[in-house]
Image 1 (cartoon, helix red, strand yellow):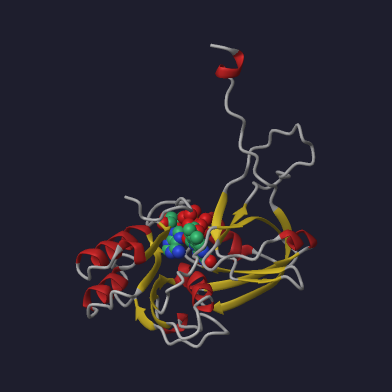
Image 2 (tube, protein in one colour):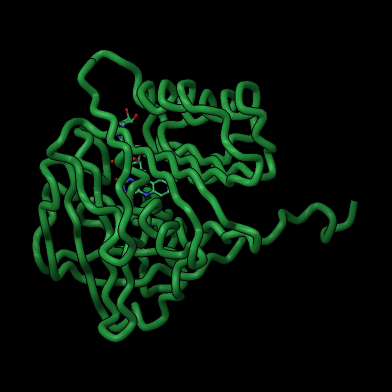
Length: 265
Ligand SMILES: Cc1cc2nc3c(=O)[nH]c(=O)nc-3n(C[C@H](O)[C@H](O)[C@H](O)COP(=O)(O)OP(=O)(O)OC[C@H]3O[C@@H](n4cnc5c(N)ncnc54)[C@H](O)[C@@H]3O)c2cc1C
């Protein structure tokens, strides 16, 4: 074996994160904090696709990352995936909405966030490209996917019919998904606090009359419930998988669920 053959493949060079600083914190509902940040490095931030994502990096306290020293071997810090809900290129300003779900690297960071705090942002990447023949869509989301759902609504072609179903804690979590597109979601309130996350979304899908074969579906919520909803849509309603865009946004009982869970299994 030659030296060239035995050499490890070169490490994928990822672009450095963009640095920004918090300039707005809004408690949108009891369960959601909207954090805005801005800074000159966001001039390089590309327009996110609907339902796209960013990675937020959380270096441990005292660790300066990324290092200015090219020889530094400080490892990439842990990250979490969020929706770039609104990007204002005129002011290099990005807004992200955090579900206050309790203990979690990102959720706890958002609880403690203060004006002026540094934010490290990778991306944007991913996202949903609305099909050319999109005339009717059903959007199924929990709180974590409401920012993405709002972006998808804003990307619909004129005249497209949208039905939106959201599972939330209670009436205090009801809010407009978009300031630009009028829509009246079916709100499902978690009155049974011991039910699995997404159980109400599943029930709603089970109870639906059979949809038109022309309908597209955008489903984003807890990973296991996303799979059950996907299976219901295919088995009970005969939905063509090509019309389904499904994504597990988080997994019950598991930290740092992968950001590319498109329900392949
Ligand atoms: C494409 C994409 C876009 C996303 N956009 C958003 C967004 O805009 N806003 C948003 O809030 N989330 C969003 N998420 C979900 C977010 O990435 C996860 O909720 C993530 O786990 C949060 O990280 P954490 O550090 O707070 O919790 P983790 O450390 O990952 O998890 C700690 C514990 O909290 C639980 N947990 C995690 N998230 C939730 C939740 N939402 N509800 C209840 N329990 C939870 C886990 O099961 C685990 O037990 C998105 C995910 C993807 C893939």
